[in-house]
Length: 146
Image: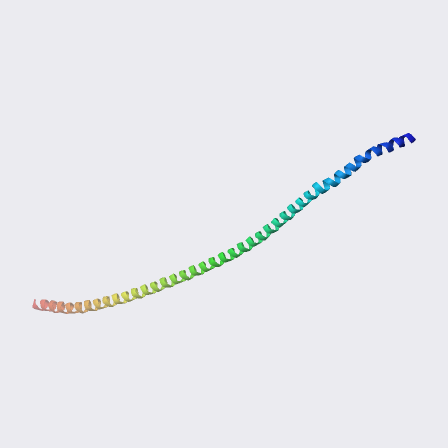
């Protein structure tokens, strides 16, 4: 057993330089490789987060501008609809005025035609009455002459 311990101590004594070399290599790699790599990764993470935050801010601004644009568009459409309705109302009123005027003219023409017909009828009655009297006188003369 003593021999085994002595052999184990020799192995450990021979492994000590390798152990120290591994520790030294670890310290060197940590300082020369892992620390700069960590800094680069941190910078990349910060840049990515910053870009993501800027993108979110820009997206919010774009959404606000879109909402503003849509509100302006809705207001413009409403104004166009109001103008169109007002123009249609004016056209309907003008059309109604023209219809009233045409009806009044038609009524006046109808009244004038009725008056002319009445005058013509009265003149025809007088003419017929005069002709009837003349015919009756003529008939009476012819009958009495025989």
